Image (cartoon, rainbow, N blue to C red; front, side, top):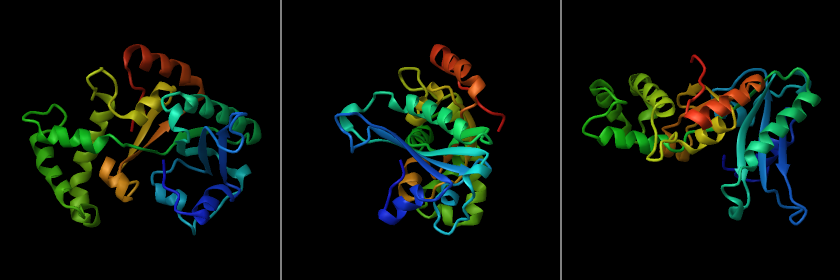
Length: 244
């Protein structure tokens, strides 16, 4: 999910005590994972990917962590695309971490929103939009400025309209097949997670700005609710969401 720029960046995600990596392997490919997930052990739910990835961050002891953050889930085999290894991997990791670190009580993701910018562009071009008011349409014209995120006044003007549109995107927008538009959302909501929080300008990398205007979201895996959430989503398209 997140670009790894070299061996040093890879070590930052693997070597510290408060970082974990889990993968599924197959006997026929003993040195090549089918899928892996990187996990950050923290004491709160992160709202910004930079706080997790920066080189000069303060590390904590794994035994002091209360939150496990799945911040990068990556399929490694092109020929196995579409097979739901991620579902099984996350559930296995949760169980393993609970046994190893009893203080952990919160399991969340910090996930990209790869379909949001394209959807929002269609809504902005439409003659009428249920998702956007005329005032929101006007405010969001500032997105046409390549450096809009560098100007505090523009950011303050855009944020309410953009986050409201994002809430609509997750809770109400559907594709032609009647499914939630965002592929990452379909994955986690289908696994039984709930949409916990929308994080504005949480990833300022060029790719994230291009695909999702910098948005990231937290999906919460609350173990007692996973089964109920999964059934409601698969059976009726209902999106479990936190108050925020």
